[in-house]
Image (cartoon, rainbow over the protein chains, first blue to last red):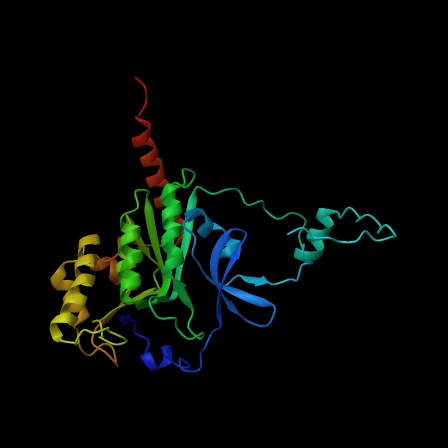
Length: 75
Length: 244
């Protein structure tokens, strides 16, 4: 993997060793996706695993969108 | 999963019908927001670093290529979308991810226009030229420099030939999709003395057009005019012309 950029690599990779994101794979409204936990109840979408291209046009599921986990009463 | 909520003994008062205009004034400071009409143009932005196989630390703003590519598939398939506008302000990034995006844009059947604002450095150059028509803002810059073999290369010894091959991919793509000659592009790429930390050239706005790299100097108006013109042309060609 080659980075082709004029930015010095020490700037790009700074903090790489300390960056340990907590990833989780979830299924939201029928779409499989990878999310990163920001705190106990919120997660940020990292990427979608969907095979339907139209899912990628939905801004609600764009990478970076924050989703909240809310408890629901079991049924 | 059914929610089994107990009915409260006292009926809660029905929600007041909120006046939408009033809400708009409170929240946005204006009475009516312009309703977003469905556009026939699909606009995509390529910003920051083009992130590829490695997730970069959070201070980097990144473009995730794995999200852009299915979006291009959806745009190509969706009959309502007639043209694609790609706006670039990128410092480059992963070579393979960048070339993947560039090849996808190049192989889309609908009219595509790229607009380079701010910067279109390194791997941003192939992405910028991959469309049917490229436009660069007067103040935008494109840094053309050799690929440095850095980062992870799995199991392949970093020889000069490998480096050369990687570079050939980029040179070949750029010369194929633009009017610049290979010798000129290589000359810009290996020029010494201009960049302090590297060999290469910084090409600004009108110079990019002069070298044949980019088609036109302009901005959003020119980009949309060109895209709409090409959409009309395609409609005319596909429509079969007037019935005589």
